[in-house]
Amino acid sequence: MTLANHEAAAIADRFLTARRSAAGLAAYPGVMPSSLDEAYAIQDAAIVAWNRPIIGWKVGRVPPTLVQQLGIERLAGPIFSSRAAQSNGSDSEMPVFDKGFAAAEAEFLLRIGRAPDPAQTEFTLEQAAELIDAVHVGIEVASSPLRSINDLGPVAVVSDFGNNNGLVVGAAIPNWSTSSFEEWTVTTLIDGAEVGTGRASAFPEGALGSARFLFELMAQRGISLEPGQWISSGAVTGVHDAHPGQAVEAHFNRGLSVRCRLLAARPE
Image (tube, rainbow, N blue to C red; front, side):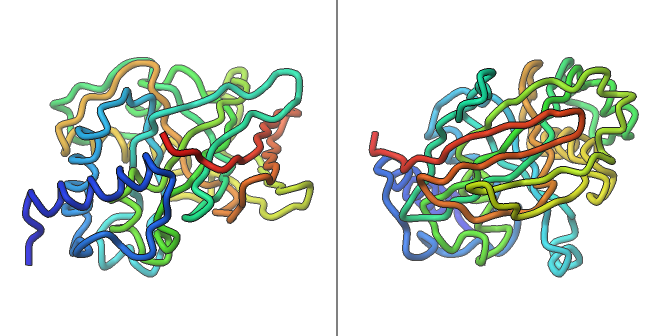
């Protein structure tokens, strides 16, 4: 059964209602999409209804066990808000849904310097890199009113803005194109305890592969990208469940780090 347009709009509306009210969702709010195309149709409807500026896009990994079934290794969702990391070392405060799902992910943030040609549907890694003018360290705040969103899999994640609720933008990496940043060992701590380490080079085609994927996906979806928008490259150290009140730190090479404290989202 194909998800009808009105069904996609209804699911999007239920997700947005839960986000506005900072409520939780005990189950997926409607008929589960049967494909990523249907999930992106829900996301598209939600973007229109949310009617807020998109400051970037998060790129996430499809679990290896589902890659063959879905025919793709990554997924994407819009980012609507960001905060600059505090230069004085204090925590940036980021809201999450305490009745839903919440996690924090250390990521590399690639800034679009030149918008891709909407008519170009395939990119090499070199062509993708040419469109990036800066790479920063950062933290993606992953949160959704749907507590089981990750357990339900990629179609659920895509349905609700890719399970994103904000971005913490840290310092720029000097001379990023020659820094070998994708080989850096990155560490995430929650309340001072190490919860994961990893390297962006463990991704298929690394962080730049996420940019390449996004450029191609947006061309397929007919969505224009803009200079200054961020591409959050994927969870370098994994996805780490977190809760309001907890402090999250991401440590990178060259003494670069980012901190934030999670707060319970409030109704609008």
